[in-house]
Length: 178
View 1: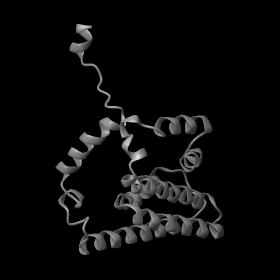
View 2: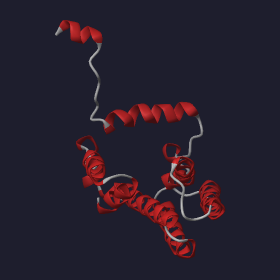
View 3: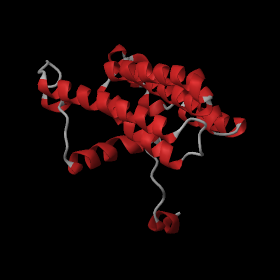
View 4: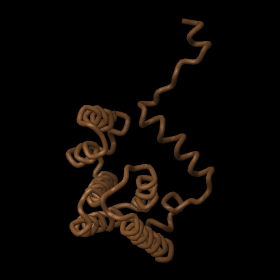
């Protein structure tokens, strides 16, 4: 939670960071993540992804000569995130979206996009290795990488309601009946 709070404080003002952290710090629907030791890879990957983002944002704010150390820290955290869970493959896309939407940085765009290229190259190499080397996990159909949009939509339909405590807004008929 401390890492998430520090990242949120870098992105916004303190009150908004506190509210954002409070809203995502606990979700009773996902209680299994807190007690099941088989899900340790999810919070571990989350920690390393948040640290990657924190160091990356720090690197953008540093003077160019000191930014390299922060980029290297971000890169190391990215490697650890990839080692934790494959969902870290999305990080280069998140960094690109951040760069396209964030305020100007102290470091040059050439340097930042060069680092993003390195992130993308490592992610691509990791994906190729994960696909090429059969393991007990990636040969099981449930753990295989699925490229179909229908599979992504089905996953979102399953997990998004859980994130919002299975919230279902009242329909007009329910309001009229009440």
